[in-house]
Length: 463
Ligand SMILES: Cc1cc2nc3c(=O)[nH]c(=O)nc-3n(C[C@H](O)[C@H](O)[C@H](O)COP(=O)(O)OP(=O)(O)OC[C@H]3O[C@@H](n4cnc5c(N)ncnc54)[C@H](O)[C@@H]3O)c2cc1C
Image (cartoon, rainbow, N blue to C red; front, side):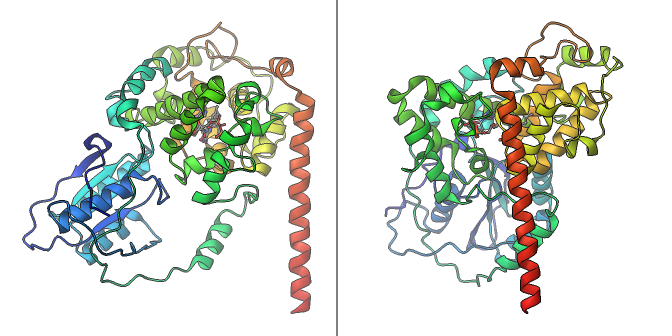
């Protein structure tokens, strides 16, 4: 139980604001604002917060004899207001938070820096990436090829086992408010009423570990080999790890996934290497893009060659033009595209291979790349369970604007952007099978919704 702090490498966090030396010798509590990485286990931001709290109370490593709970508060409203208010009320001198490269989050933190008192310090910890974003690269990377060696160079330093989270050594003396979970869930359901509920993905840290390495159908324990052979087959969704919802909400650490995958590499080296490429290189490349490219969701964020070729072809004749509403309702003339849209709407997670086809077709069916980007990002963020993630912005930018890709043979509408079509999909997998599968997903959802309405009506009649 020794307070063995400073296990968090200095490169893992950055100081967003250095507070002035406080007049009050009592440093007050450390507040940890959990945002992107919503877990207790394997969380560098939480570990850092606890270590800093220990250091502030005892300026040298000290054996802890007390085990106290860390109180949990849940605030509703704008973080720019709730966080500074809470920091002020509890007299904290240090605010620790996790990292997200997305614009709204970065702006919100800038505002929080301005609103807390002079003596408050703010640390931002990259608990999401295996190699912290600012350590991997100090600039916008061109492609996986340019970032891969930079990440690999740092893996021995950062891809390490996590220390055990030490209990905090000072007691929280304030109140811990009760949380109205039911009210909160009702509000979320009301606000998201247009999006069908996802019922296959159990939330939480325990469920995430089960998906990674559970004895029933864990990815590393039962499905690893399929990752080499089946991961590009949309009819075999379980050929993929299925980890993106958990990674997106931070309910599992990518570092934990990488450590566990590496430990079973000898069972299936090809599958593990391919998985680590996606999990570390591609995922961290997406964070790099959103962190260093302020226009990560617009044509301005494309490379010069891609912008030019897209503009050269912006007025090319389109065979079809669809509105956002027509696409949202899967009302295009392409049954394969409609199937992918239905898979996303009814299942909440479109297969990775289909996401590329889906976004590229939107470019083909809209007035130009800006509109295509807007629609694809809107739909992706609304319906994908792993949406509103750097991976999603980059997925759309890759498909429509060639970000992290190279130029290909020039053709109408796409210019030199990589092209995908129905015939290509037909050569790769059973397109008709996928269309039937997506239809079944829709039918199941419809039946469930109908039986829910019936049981509600029955309850109303009985009461
Ligand atoms: C148009 C488009 C939109 C996308 N939208 C999202 C999104 O909103 N959220 C999201 O997490 N991913 C998105 N992706 C990337 C990828 O399709 C998904 O991460 C993957 O399908 C998730 O399923 P999985 O976890 O079972 O994949 P696995 O293949 O098992 O991958 C494991 C993990 O590696 C990472 N990963 C895999 N592929 C990529 C990739 N191409 N780029 C970056 N990281 C990757 C993800 O974190 C994923 O969970 C998008 C891709 C495209 C082309």
